[in-house]
Structure formats: structure tokens, C-alpha cells
Amino acid sequence: MEYIYSLALFTVASSVTPGPNNILVMTSAVNFGVNRSLPVFFGICVGFALMLLLVGIGFGQVFELFPNLHTIIKIIGVLYLLYLAWAVANSSSDIESKKQQKPLTFLNGALFQWVNAKAWIVATGAVAAFTASGNEHLFQVILVASTFLVLSFPSVGIWLIFGSWLKKYLKSKRNQKIFSLTMASLLVVSVLPVLGELVVKFS
Image 1 (cartoon, rainbow, N blue to C red):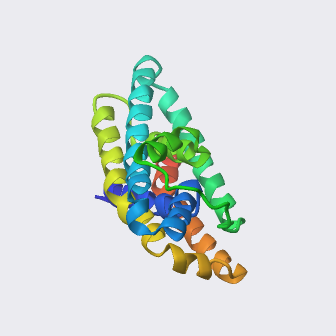
Image 2: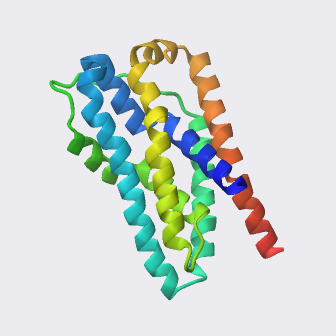
């Protein structure tokens, strides 16, 4: 049960954190409204889950050949996520962007994941931190991808529905800092069980 709670917490924290996906959705909602932004919103949520699934399956094949590599990647993944938390805590949300001429499509949102640096960090970190090598790997990859698919809709949806309000709210440097520190803290908390597992493994 602790695994599910930790995974859910990590999913929400990483999905709702300011980043390219959320900024894209929010800007689209501000420029075109909620209804016309639904295609790119769905594309982002579904596209990331699919990307995570494919990345996870690829890792699984490598882990079968090099079992010890899983621990190494788990360590790297945790370090990436801690770095992401640090970057979020020390960054502000630059929500200003050039206006688009027309809203992006479902395919635009899905394909955007493959060039989104944060998506790669989160995907590789999630697979490394919340899966194990062996027979359970595929099931865990599917579980992680499914969790992101379900929880990313409300997490990213906040930026879609409240785009205009968030834009005004995050113009305040103080509010940006509070929001960023909160999200960074959630990311750190979400990887604590994995850190504990690694400490036990090497102790």
C-alpha cells in the first residue's frame, strides 16, 4: 500500500508542477478557452502515459540482460528527481509566451512529450524508482503508466480550467515561490521510500 501512495504522490507532484506541458495547456486555455484546448490536453495526458510505457518496456528488456543495471538507473533516476525538485524550488513560472494562431491538436500534444526534457526526466525516474527487475517489471510499468494516465488528467486539468486565474496568481513572485517550494517538497517526499530502499540495500 505504501508503494501505491508513494507512486500516487509522485505522479500528482510531478504532473502538477510547473513545466512545459502545463504551461502549454494553460497558455492554450487563456488564448482559446477550455473547449478548444481539450485536444492538446488529452494529447499530453495520453501521450505521456504512452511514452512512459514504451520507455518502461525498453528498460525491461535491458534489465533482463543486465540485472544490476536496474539499481544503477534507480539511483540515477532518484538523483534526477531530486535535481528536478531543486530546480523547481529555485525557479519561477514564466507563463508569458507568444500567442498561437490556432490551438494545438491531440497529435501535437502527444508528440511534444518526446522533445520535452521534463517528460524524459519524469518518465525515466518513475520507471527506475517504481519498478523492479524480473517477472513483475512489465506489470509495474503498466501500473505506473496507468497511474499517470488517470492522475495526470486532474493534475494537468487544473492548469486547463484555471489557466486565467493561475496566470494572474503566479505573476506574484511571492506566490510563485510558495507554489514552487510546495511542489518541490512533494517531489522530495515522494522519493523518500526509494531512498530508504537504497540505503537498506547498501547498508
